[in-house]
Length: 370
Image 1 (cartoon, helix red, strand yellow):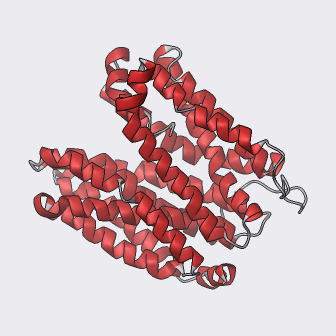
Image 2: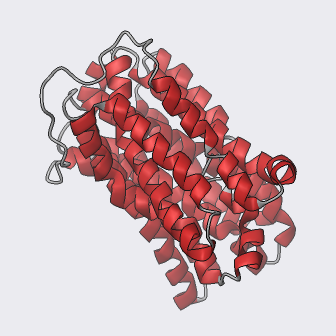
Image 3: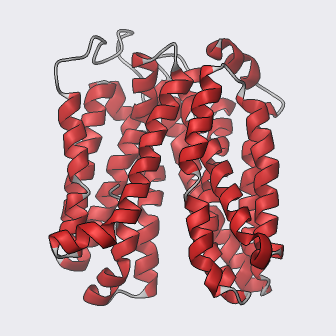
């Protein structure tokens, strides 16, 4: 909610604070970069505080940072945006630990449920900020603060003494530094990173590409199609998880279909662009949800947070760097279609990484799911 509440009011912020286009771009990418750089802090928090209190800490930071963005001009806006990214970065490795601790026998289903929360939060903030929250509060500053309040509510609920599960793991002191030499860290990171590159890159270049090829009228419907199917993908993964389905075939199919969707956007935007955008949005969401379950499925209780932190760092660094490479390829070649090449590579990665030669993820997944 706190992140997706910003884009609708960016024109007002830019006009009021006299921000350059570069500054606007930095505002939208800072949280993504901080998700990469701050994920290890979440792992350290789990090791020191346990998953529940780490979750509380991350939520409080999100709530405070969301409100602080409107307190004091440009400096406060950027500092609070950095803090917001750090708060969310703490949550990233904490949620798989919560899932493994509280829902050990239903990891896939529990992951799909909290990913539904992510999707619903995105939709609410993106759709209600301008027509409802800004008119009600009277300013973009207060609107951003309002979207931070649910974080405080969630933190308060987590402190209620109603849980029958331990606050922290009983295995003793935990390590927190990710295993960067472990191929599992890199493979899960590339799995999540492939889906993130596909989603963030397509969101970034779709409007400018459609303008460049003479279809500005398709920008709104294509963006809506790109971002609307995510709840359906979360429901699909939930159903498949309850039936014990293996993710390998699902990811492989989504990879092929997503590349076809990118092809439709590039080569037939007038006839198939909206459908291609919907396919890309659906497939990227499936990859994201499956990736969220990987740490709890593949790591032991004492290592879930470490794997999740390493995976998140790799994933969001890719989501930050790959679209930059696409923009550079477009600029140097003059070929606008090359902007979507990194997104196609991302789709290929999430469709194949689970079956790469080496350490067998497939066998371990089958055992965990059963």
